[in-house]
Amino acid sequence: MNATTSVTVEHHESHDNLLTPVDTARCATAGIDAIIVPTNRPTPFLTEAVSLARTLESTLVVLCSGQASVAETVALASHVDLIAVDVDRLPSTVLPRFATTELLRGTDFDRRTDTSLKRNLGLVIARLMDWEHVAFLDDDITVPAPADLEVAAGLLSASIAAVGLAVRGFPDNSVVCHAHRETGGDQGTFIGGGALVIGRESTESFFPTIYNEDWFFLLDDYGLRGSAVTGRVIQKPYDPFASDARAQVEEFGDCLAEGVFALLDEGRYAEARAVGYWEKYLAGRLALIDSILGKVRDGVRGDDEAHRMEMALLGARKRCEAIRPVLCVQYLEALAEDRRRWATFVRRIGARHAWRISGARHVLDVLGLADYAEYVPVGG
Picture 1 (tube, rainbow, N blue to C red):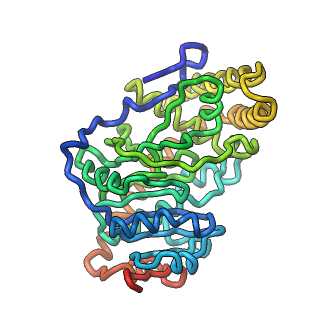
Picture 2: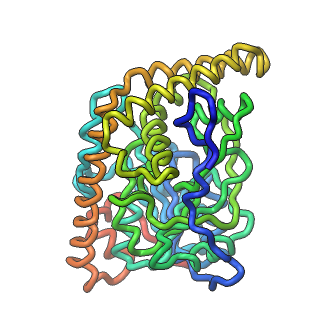
């Protein structure tokens, strides 16, 4: 564990100590049944995922919204076993309602993205298809060695619930953590949903609608479920300081996740529902942002980048100031309730339908997706 030693003692620059050590040289590889890609970008962004699915002979599950098109995905993904769903048309009754979502609805912390919904839909499809190993992959990720996914699948066990591929290229961090690195901090990254391999039992966890939803997916009532890292992927670059909106949208989820993982680092997870802890943590978070702002204003970066970074950090600071410690506790209590609700839902839907599931088309029918989705087997 690395932590700063000034007033920002609550910010941990790395959580790598939480990952289970693995010996990839001794592990057997395993097949990837499906690659699940949530996307809202134009269809060419799926080229990498299509190539991976062909190479690994995996089903490709593409969950489309925004600029992504089911029809164009079908045209691109020739010679691939493909399930493509138009999430923009998805009925609200397909998945359960979550207490975490309702808690934030209508507030400044309400996250209006559909990434979590898509990943949760992918979990349900995986459960009904009875897939043993699936890989979540973002559409801006490149996998240089496809076999790394099979190595990750081979590492899954009773003690390891999820295996991420190490993110190289552009770091996968929040705006605040990017700024911390850019101003001299030794900021690390952690495994996440952009390149994550899970087994069948992990479909009983879910992705809440919050920034760092993948970190919360890895949690249970006792802490972090067994997690490991292997291989590598390349994240395409983007500008984290393009506007202050990104920082504001991220801030609640980043505060909550970093605060919880700091406790995990120290073996103090039980304190996550203590209001007093969050009072201290949020004060430390503000001190961290102020420290970074001071470095930016002292000229660590060039003028144009410094201005954009400052505006983004001020946006994060404004949102952080609005977070009340009790909300952090309420959210984590709602998260525990949602985990139980989701696990019950997944088990029931699996028990109700698994005995008669006859393939992907039947799964789409069972979920009421036949009018919003396409299934194209290999070879059409």
